[in-house]
Length: 163
Image (cartoon, rainbow, N blue to C red; front, side, top):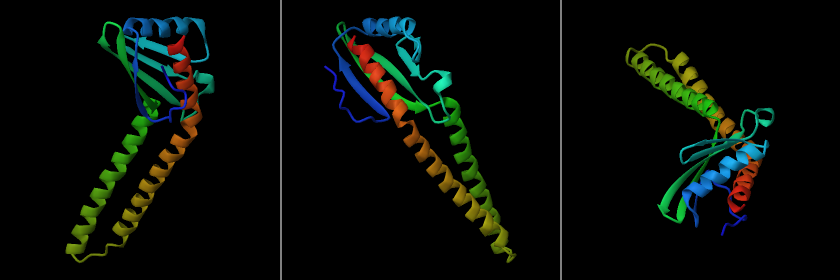
């Protein structure tokens, strides 16, 4: 039915031979019977995360969406992602650096056309490029640091589905 040898990817999909209601019920029941993970069920969406005491800045969470195919089968769509606050902060920083870079380039072009010194604008542009590179590597480091948590969440999901 399900393979435990799947390579973890940020998104995955599984076809299951059981009704959606049974799958949701399994997660609702396991939510009451264990305290290893925090489980939230909202309609056909299930969110699984590590408990607060084990979370770190890069901890992942697993979002499952269950879609009914027919009476006795469903499709499970999974998505690993960071805490929404972390994701929002990273997007804000990327957008802020991008906007500042464009403003700096406009300032640089204006001073260049006016034949003024452009040293400050070039230094600012270099700092912003460096900030963008640092954001990229910080995100890559966070992704790598979150892999063990992804494996735990995925294994827990498989165990719950197979029960």
